[in-house]
Length: 160
Image (cartoon, rainbow, N blue to C red; front, top):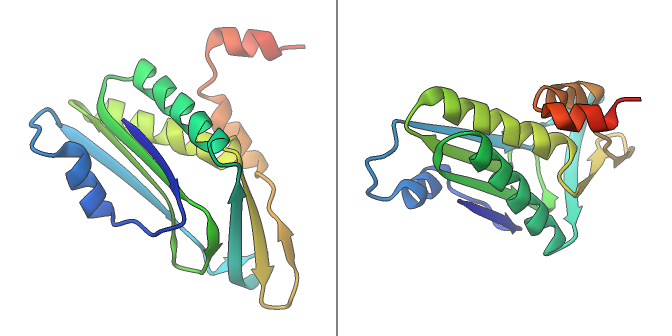
């Protein structure tokens, strides 16, 4: 299990090799790599800047990764999230989940990505080709996707 927040790019294949090593416990390895899109709001994206609070961000990502490990029988997992100035096509995030069975690996990867899209403590600022841009808010669809992972006691605590 591991979490890294870094400015440097990552190599997905190398990270998977490092994570799984010589283990034969992996029946399923699911990877998700998020990249910077070249468009936003109908305009060409020039630049995306990601900011975060060091140590706080890592602690929060580790907490949610531990939640995934508690919910599904993972043999390994990894979350890498970049920060700094990123260009269209650059990698932003890598999620790798490893399990003996595909269902657990897929579900854990989806859970982690839904969390990262909505609750991870990162702030994104876009610069568009027409000179506009600004801070990016989470989308309602991303919030809805995260709701499916709420535990019964979590939904009861938030009900009116």
